[in-house]
Length: 140
Image (cartoon, rainbow, N blue to C red):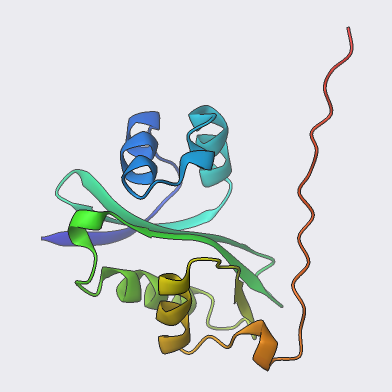
């Protein structure tokens, strides 16, 4: 039986297993850093017994906007409605917020979000700008 819950963190083993299964390798370069990022997010997980099979996580100011960073479902559990349930739980938690934003480059997921009522930025006359941060290297 699947169990949905808010969690504040995951083990490095869970991160490697789930993110690796969906080939989100950017998160696996430094799993400890990923773990800290997850711990500082609002995260809803779904487990099959003890096994982590999916999650949605995001950030919000709790008043004006929320941003979904990840929606992940293990390939063995995809196409069973789990992603929709995670998304619905996230949106319900932030129901007082007028805008939920997600950035998505995967065409299959873009269709998923469109089916869930999200509007592509092309249709909102909005532009998305992303600046990748260049971390400073310490000088010794």
